[in-house]
Image 1 (cartoon, helix red, strand yellow):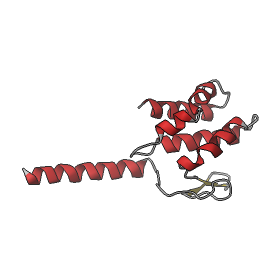
Image 2 (cartoon, rainbow, N blue to C red):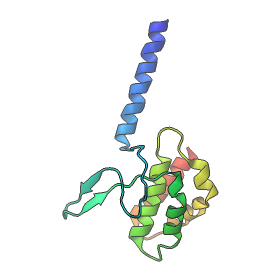
Image 3 (cartoon, rainbow, N blue to C red):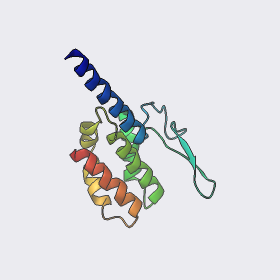
Image 4 (cartoon, rainbow, N blue to C red):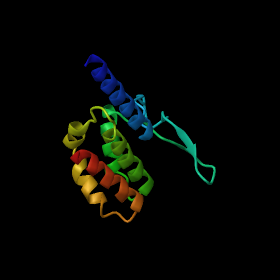
Length: 132
């Protein structure tokens, strides 16, 4: 019986690790995402380097300010929504309540009407993560 429980626990741990790798989520903390991002960097087809920033609960005010003050800048809005979505995609204890408390949920719903499909996708994904 003990051997079976150990095997099950090991399988569950491996599955959790595998999911975390597939989601490409790092639990590193970004000191100041406005200056430097931490995380993986990628080059797109045009050779432009993109950095995946890692956001934490401490970055929620920054993301809300960016989201509210994007003033038509789709890139800023996309960055902010992606930051929220990445926080909500953390496998263990995503910060759902702090994100709800900051008032992001109605903004996500509004972004579903956005002309940019990438922003719609990220907003829908964030809403899905809140619901789950």
